[in-house]
Length: 618
Figure 1 (spheres, rainbow, N blue to C red):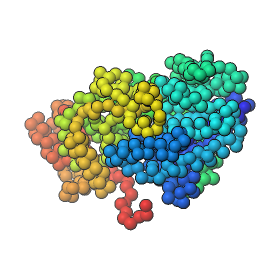
Figure 2 (cartoon, rainbow, N blue to C red):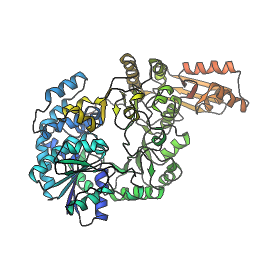
Figure 3 (spheres, one colour):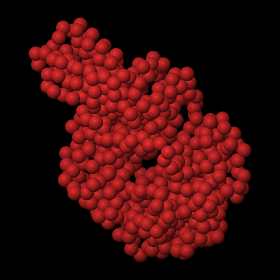
Figure 4 (spheres, rainbow, N blue to C red):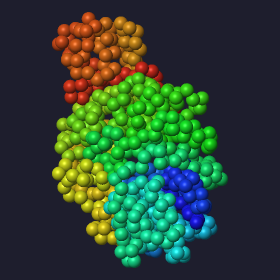
């Protein structure tokens, strides 16, 4: 048997597809009789655009759409015309949608005429391997391009078997995709490591997969959806991915000159926080939120093997959250490695200062902590288990230890009010030396999230997001099962308050590159060098008990808790004097307050920042 594995746009062009790497290795070890080829559609799409557009479109435009177009299905619309054999499919409707939302879709519109010819090229490359089965992995905006290619393949080779899997196929989404696209023979719903090799056995034996959990298949003209398993794939069944095919394609591609490659790997699946306190807006783990993690020695062995094999030091674990046990097992071992690793990890925002130091020592370059807000009441509505001062502490400590923080500011939660945002907006000018959020966005209703599963939490009305109508020719009853994103009535703060928040955060972004607030601790005296944008250059001197108090505010404390701490060390001033000093420190922007809690804002060292240059080439 010959099998082709395909990852279509908008797979990141600088990273291998983890599902393809895993499935290829599974087949290599468990089904060595299966000859596997790979189609890396993300890379091929950029190559094709560079050539077909005469260099007008290239990696930057593709990466921008892949990163910022998800909430509006921009990448899917590019290929929707191919899916429906109509180059003008929903063109006017899409443009009206974009204009109403103020979206810049110039690159999207210019890409669309190239899509059909790209699908022709993709068909030729996939069929060159004469596969019996083509497996597509689909997440977010990969559906339309994958379906367009699958449809063409089945037209040319009706005997070919087409299999879909991936996050877009989880739960009812997978059955909807299957029953509405007859050219898709099978859909694997849920994790595929155990099912996919067995499905190939059924295909080879020309047998129905009626006994395979989660598989959708055709019984004549009827789409059958087998009940998915409730048992998650154990870490022992997840092999080290084989990325050699991807690297061969990447190294030979002109795309290599435009982007830096990253390796992807996983240490865990699911979310240990979400198992008990799933964030109300988050649906990313789908139907398999149960947390399971690879043992430390195995994670380190896989990391070592991948880095040595591919000679790439930029590594992106795709885990939804870092296993806290890794702080005492994996991270110390990584710190001892002789490689100059750049690792990117998703973490919980309530880690301690010493744990931030451990991350930096282990070669972490970027962390994504899911901060989402700086107000404790809003964070409680999210079920985050933290408050604003906890999140500020992390931003401060990451700045001290030169860790890049990727985070977004979310709003629009049922039950929030303008009063929750005013204190944050007022204090943002004091935060400009810390790393600002990448984006500010009203939350979108996601399938699998508590907000979606429990309408009583505040989103009673829900409809498939409007952009799906520009991609699929299906009634809302089917889109309701196919969709991951949903439209609902806006909740939380009004647009006036949202606008004030967005303006304040934009000012934060502008001020950050030239802002510093650095504390020098001399024991009985702390001197804080204040060079934040919008403030006069100042050196704040905190002597005696004030130095002890500011040092104690390295951790979040209430005013009463701070007074008790100083009392235990024989340094407490009268309570009224301490309260007055906290007010002065807040006026000077040296502390941040969220409700009853306070936290110090000064970093412990000067951050490393590239100079802001003018006149550089785009």
